[in-house]
Each structure stands twice: as C-alpha cells, then as structure tokens.
Length: 224
Image: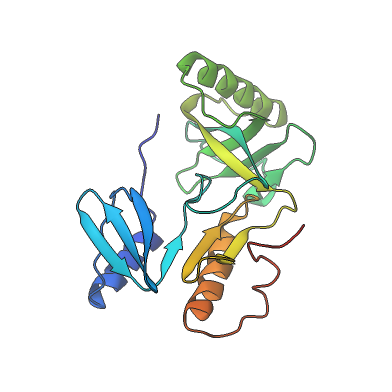
C-alpha cells in the first residue's frame, strides 16, 4: 500500500501559516469539541485549545456534532501502473471518465504512470483483505489493457478508500444551523479540488461576517 504523501500546496500552506505565527499540530487527534460560552473547547491528547470558531474539514469521515443521515458512503478502488515509455496512442493524455456503472476513470502522472480507478461498492467500510484489493486491482488493470492493449501494464500500487455522496450530489459547506461558530467543509460528490477552493472562500467570508451569495446553495440545513 502506498504511503501518504503531502502535496506541494499543503507544504506551502503550512509554511505560510508559520510566517503568520499560526501554530500547526499535525497528526493530532481531536477527541471532543464542547461549548464554552460563546467559544469552543477543542480537546486533544496534547492539551485543550480554546477557539472562537471551529472548522471541520473531515473528508468522508463522520463530521462531529452534525446529522449525516443524508450522506451515503461507498468504497472505491484504484491502481497506479508501472511507468509507460510514451503515450503516443493516448490523445493529449486527456482524462478518461466513463459514465456507465460501475464507472472507470484513467489519467496519467508526471512520471509516466497510469492511475485508474472505479469499481465502486455500496459498502461503508474499507476491506481488510489484501487478496480482495489485489483482485480488484487486477480487474482495473484488465480494464485499462482493454483500452490500451499496446501498453505492457503491471500494477505497482493498489488501494481502496471510502467515497461519499450527498443526496443532491452537492457538498455541505457552512455554519452549523444550531451551533454558532461551528463550520463545516464536507466535499461530498468527488469534486474535492473544486469544493475545497469554493469552501475556503465561503467559510473565510462567513467567519468574518461577510455575506456570501453562494453559501445558501451548499448550506447544511438545505432540504434537498
């Protein structure tokens, strides 16, 4: 299984925070968040932090203090192949995304690999069976090979992860409807890069008391 790798943007963000004297506590568990008057106490194994505003950006994990009945978790598989010498047969090395179910997507990497994924399953937990992961990986390899039989493909990395969707396929971004100063950025639907950008702008303005016209579309208490 591949190790987690921090993106360059994450490294730059951390450096920017440090220049502004913003402390960063990476890989620190938050055990509880409790109200303290108009503020919030964030409890962790290394100490308790007091904050005027708290933002939860928890990916597809259950969001604390939030009703998640409108969220469906599935699991999805992915592989990274061996480096390919050239992609002359792949027009523009464009992203390929099928719309059938189960879907398949393919893209290339800067070091010449193919990343392919899909084979979603309606199960809200990742499997502990390495054999199952390898079986799904081989199926993905075969799907890629069917599209590009000229490539000599082997699977060098294979993994599985949870994938979340909302009923209306939109993210949940905004302030908790009943708990002031608690904010959420939950990018359900798979458009994480786009939702992260929009969410950071929306939440930045809400925290500063600035009205954002897009916030109503992704508010947490929408009825759809």
